[in-house]
Length: 176
Image (cartoon, rainbow, N blue to C red):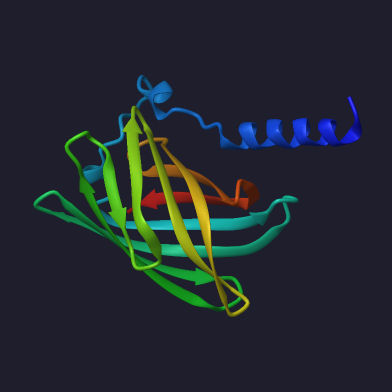
């Protein structure tokens, strides 16, 4: 096999591996069972960080979330405070569709976020408009949340663009 064919084979394998994803249904038996309307209701504090693809922590942040539901529609009002002093606000609107998935929208989300739940787990997939150095980039999020108990949830999201992993966001949520 010449070097070009070898390189194409490696790149193809890498792309296929990068596209594979864990199915949320494998967590169906995990407890405590996540009830979106129960957990995301009231005030939640979160602490997080963004790591680039080398693992270096690039940004740390806290989030104050005020969550409520009205007639099956959830509102997650998030205030971010970053370690560099910058602030950001995101307001999510959540609805459960007929197939049991959650649909989420926010001003900086392209289209809709699609969320699937099973057991103690929520998996969101969406495209976020990310401001970096005065430019806007559309990046893919594969966002996994795991309910640990009635107060604590852990979150790990992988960010990618064109199938290339850019980094990870890690968060710890604590419900008041």
